Length: 115
Length: 220
Image (cartoon, rainbow over all chains, first blue to last red):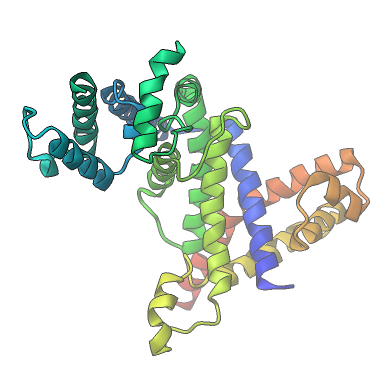
């Protein structure tokens, strides 16, 4: 009998016993409290993701899909095309990726209006 | 949406050589809705119960407590699911089963890794890092598993159906239909014997731990 087959047997039994234990829901009060905290963690993470997606709601999918260097490159192109365009904040290297994408969306819309 | 509405967008895309974004931002709204619907107290208690039992076995086999292990395993599974590192497809399996499968896979990987690098010794200077990275959860794991199997066989000595299932497991056969085929057990016999096997196995880690402590005390 190989080592691996014994480990597999042990793992399979550990899994099956744990599945049975899960079905019984026999948690202590402390475990139940920790489970609730983990649920809150999951819900918090989901809320974070939703907030992030909502921030970029008005941004077209192409820009949302762009990585940081591509966004910066495109912004630089727009500045060349419209050097006199007024932007509230030009120090783009210090912006977060999401803020950069929002800025590019604004810039693209401005470019479309001017052309 | 009218054709004229999407024309500027297409030209912008063509002008900048940007590939059409066919994928929605991750996670998509349907996924989020499913997650919200399934992320209930009952679901998390199901997952917690599974991980708590796995953690108990790990602690017995390692011979020490691992504070925070349950939280760590569940948080990692959740985090990787949100990040899309492990994909959950709500149309294919419930969230609780997905999380348990991810955690099972992580734990199994540890055992496989121990097997894969078992030949590497810490004394090998060139491979020290590799060996350290590949260190099994517990260096005495194989001895523990040997003891587990021996004790299980002793407990089931007068139960040929349980021993037959155990032999099938050692052959890597764990699926009910296949176990029935190789052991010749009927579905009903398998069901009862499988339940007896799990009952014997359930408290075995605790007994092994107690026996180990007892023999250490005897030596001292």
